[in-house]
Amino acid sequence: MDITQGIGIAFFMISSLLSRQFAHALKPNGDNLASNLASKGSLLKRPPHFRRSITSSAALSKIEERIGRGEGGRGIEEIVQRGHFKKAAEHLARLSPNSTVVILSGFPCCIDRSPPSETDGPPGAFSIARSAVALGLKALILTDECNEDVFISGASAVGDWAGGGRLTLESFPPESEWGEDEAKRLIEIVDNRCDHIVAIERPGRAKDGSCYTMRGISMDHLLAPLDKVIDLAKQKDAGIVVTAIGDGGNELGMGKVYSEILASKKILMPEKCVSVISCDHLIVSSVSNWGGFALAAGAGVVRYFDTKEGGSCKAMVAKCLQSLEEETKILNSCVSAGCRDGVSGEMESTVDGMPLKTSLDCLEEIHEICEDVE
View 1 (cartoon, one colour):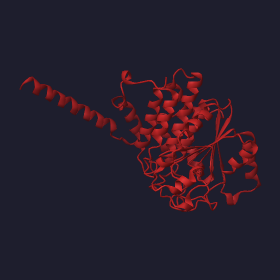
View 2 (cartoon, one colour):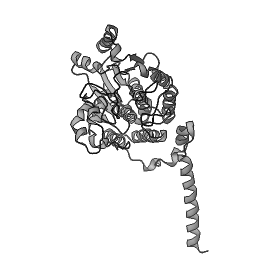
View 3 (cartoon, one colour):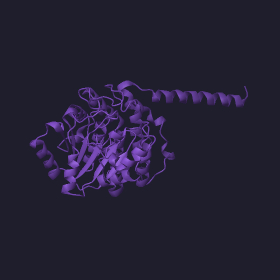
View 4 (cartoon, helix red, strand yellow):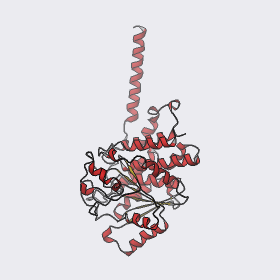
């Protein structure tokens, strides 16, 4: 054997070893998937000396690009509103201390199941709530009674940050059961506890006034008219900003791009399902939960850049956005209460037909982007 052959064999052995290590790092392991990824993550990350610091604007652009690739195969990359994500993150990060962020969520598309709730929405809503609390704000999640158990179960897994009244959850009955008491409750919220509104994976009324699943099935019998919060808030103060996060076209806020959705050759949603309800800032994401991750992290980036709070951008974002392990616990807790994948209909820790690992990969990448902010 000459020296060239020896070097070639050594290189082959090292490459094979690294390949096995990479395969082991990426192999799912049930409920331990998040910890497996985290413990092996050093194999996948750039060494510190290869990292290049970036500005906050560059980080926000990278996050926006990461969530808007259209990985769900719905063609949403055609309707991403460039710059809306940045504006939404800036607004959330710069709200006055002790302001209340009202979060509308819950998409009961599994209408023949009890509960009919889907796994896309609750984790993202908790991400936004966590970020709000980390920024010195309060968070109020509003959902339908049919989704209440899922959100309560998810809230039990979010951690200590939700204590002390910083996070509140309220549910409302379907519109057909509304009376004077429900109307008064909503008015009280708008009058006293509403400084900013974020809708994430929340059904939006179509042209005929009804809300539909992507298969064209009405959800009206399950839904509380939570979009009335927006009308009441705008009547009270036209300056109250509404941010909406969606991934298909039938969500609240997608009215902002109604014409673009109808004109798209990739987005195949029936016209009768497309939402006409608009918003101020629209975050279009491959999966709505990912849009929640992004907004939570983005607000942390802006706050750090504004104030240097937290000591580093990485630390500030870690306060605002859950870790992979925490996300796994939240999603599993929602599923334990009966939450289902909205695409497969299965009661499992998948989202929009994608395995948990796909969401964890996105979450990890968002954290990594924020590590580079100078």
